[in-house]
Amino acid sequence: SVFCQDTLVENIDFRRTWASPKDLGHKAAAVNLSDLAAMGAEPWALSASLALPASTTLKDAMAILRAIHRYAEQFGAALVGGDLSATEGPIVLSVSALGKMHGKRVLKRGGARLGDQILVSGTLGGAGAGLLLLEQGLNKPKQLISKQLRPVPQIALGKLLVEMKSVRVCTDISDGLDVDARNLLGSG
Image 1 (spheres, rainbow, N blue to C red):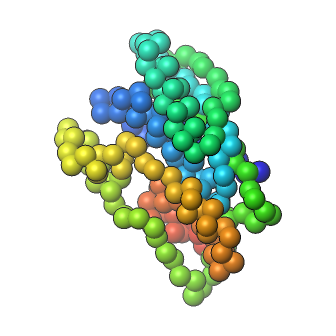
Image 2: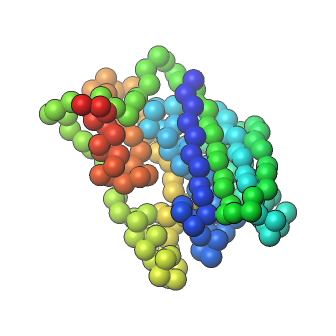
């Protein structure tokens, strides 16, 4: 089994002016599912903890949790628990994910060596472009906005890569290619 956790903080990772409760739940699930994919794991369970200001409606809180639940289900995982708390500050949403491995091999982030090739799936820059558009008050083009608000984890690709002996390290690039490429190197 493998485990990961990500936290989304209002005004750091999202803004309520452009992210709906459904967007927030979707993204919170997706970033964790993406971490599982990068390890080559099959999603099994998610747990979500929310710290919400008093101004948050029950409808919005439930929309966040339903979005996490529904998106996790699309990948065969269940929302199995969590916690709810109040905060005087911004919304804080922390999701943990548990995945199962079909074999002993796990793709790790660090350990690339000089001469290794770095390959990227998909198109780079879409989420960043979507963020710039949202921060400027724009909501088009939809495909870029969607890359920011509703990312799609590469679960099937992760399962394929973990089976390939030539692939030694892997990471998702949710923090950006520059940062995450350095993570591939590990220490030294």
